[in-house]
Image (cartoon, rainbow, N blue to C red):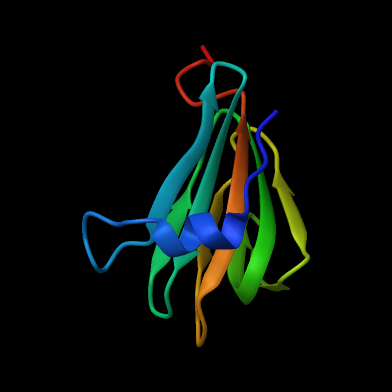
Length: 111
């Protein structure tokens, strides 16, 4: 068993480019990938699709998530689920957005 503190992982997360969100892979297996994101104001993960189911758990802060029906405001405690091939993205607006993304099955494991 492994127990993680998402806010600690987010604080330690790094980005190769200061304009991009910081990320940390927490778990990576064929069935599931878990990633922590720290998205600073003005940063975003551009809308895209995945052949996997993507579940976002908002840990701290708030921001906007996008989907096929537009953008929605989210806050700490919210849970957002996207089906396979559904457009999804997220961005911070005026405060950092910390979230955990669970992607199942792991990208690359879906044929």
